[in-house]
Amino acid sequence: MAKIDELTDEKAAEFGHAFVRWLTDEDPAAVAHYFADLDPHAIKDAEAAELGRAVLEDLLADRYIH
Picture 1 (cartoon, rainbow, N blue to C red):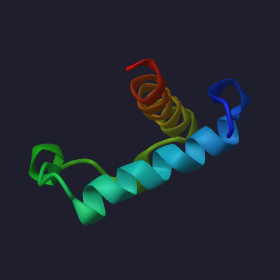
Picture 2: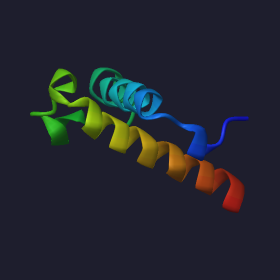
Picture 3: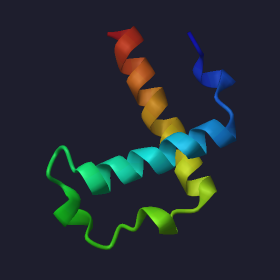
Picture 4: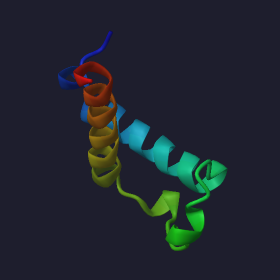
């Protein structure tokens, strides 16, 4: 299994972009109306990498700490 410290900025950015697209396109939690101005294409790679890394760190922490 990959570890969070092995996550490159490029992979984190890819995940971040995909995560935002999923939130806005699929809207599984019906929250897109709260973020009407959110444009997945306007998010910069650095922002997407930060988001992707944060989400993955939270998921891994929740899975392995509890």
